[in-house]
Length: 348
Picture 1: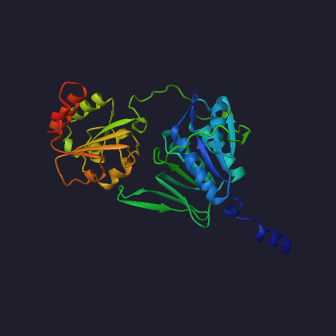
Picture 2: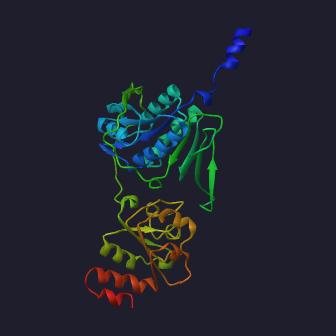
Picture 3: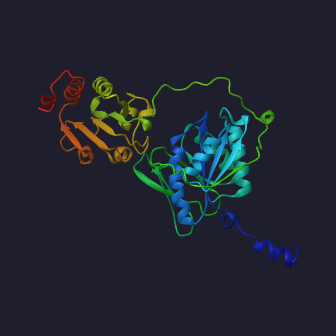
């Protein structure tokens, strides 16, 4: 090797030095954008401003022009659009291949993906071959003075919050839990650049095909305006909670205890190891109020707690608290809401 060649090698910028910009994956299916995408654009805008970088949205799908335009309105400086029939319906291999090629070509500093079924499915197909650091199920994001992403997520069953950094490889990737950030309203006067990128995926080389799609009928509690949440105090009897939820036109939610006992499906769990919700009304039935649960519902507009333990921590986070037997209080509240009881008598 000559001295010139040695000098060139030594002066070549590292992967970390070459990386720039914050990327956010905008997840779109048949015209509908997952709300977590807009949440991440809001948070990505903050990170990009702190770093002095551009915020870049990546939209993959078929007929995704409207999503690209809204990404600009939601804070993106630029949008990369991969628009092709090969991307509809979603399959992990085309999405992963397209995302990976763009990452290898353009080397973003940070890449954020919603922690949805789709995001979790293909993120590893990008991170592994590019040697990127991928943190899953992130609930907090920040950057330090060196531009490192500080990705925080629950660990050890939610008992601690771990901060994970990736100092040597780029991009710094994270799948982020839906509902932990609040999406900003779109600014229709914002301007930005939309770039259509080449599709690098060939249908003939795609290894999978979709034969049938089954959509779960379980409501996503993140989108619910009202929730009635059940905890260990119900003892597995969800009848009163279901009755109250029907009277309130609310969805059922649950603490980890109720899910672990098998009383209700995991998709309805609220907390650090479940989902983060921001409903207008959150009614906690028989929930003690452990910090892991409170982290998932503390941004609710109005919290009502019903518990027979006057010292239950949940009352410290409630706007209204009722100390009493939930099996008596909940049915009386439901009857009052349905006009079958005097509201003043319910709390007596």
